[in-house]
Image (cartoon, rainbow, N blue to C red):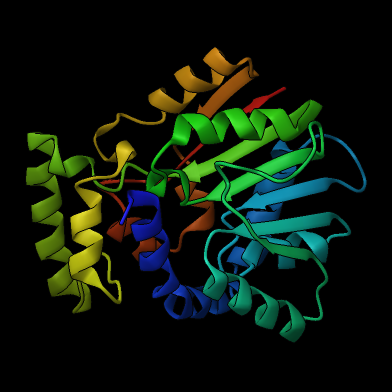
Length: 249
């Protein structure tokens, strides 16, 4: 089994848990916080053509389509797309949803004004290929916004490992559960050792790649967690806080 297939199979099993997470977000402050954050960086246009890469259970297609934008959500896993369809129907939202490999997009060049993705790039087996594809489908003047974190750098950095293990103990004592929980924890831990991004220092790696591919006005924001995470989530993610990296074509 190649790595991409193994990654796909793993996330098929995580779909329900992630759908439950976005249900909480849709009912909380996160709905407006995420929409405001994305549109703050988006091109100035009343109706954007947006591609949500790795849409998962459909959070961004819901909140952005309800803001009057044309949203297409893609995901490698069929189960994520099925949950996304269910969630959009429940929210009376309308968006295009497709099962697709983000490293091999089936869209023409220059198709979108805005590309967004959250917690996806760390899972890819060839993120350089993905960024190249994303640049291809972005229109001139369009922008890309990538939200992620250095989820597994502590496996390769001794100082981070010490900090991570200390925080893990604190989180268990304070909240009664580990920092991160997955349905198949053993497979998740095994994959984390093999993924390309796990040992990369980010967002510097992303900025370098985007410049190499021709993106302009590249930038990074390492404080976005203060806007889109609640107090407990900020605590749980303090060792690997979320970042935003973006650029323009």
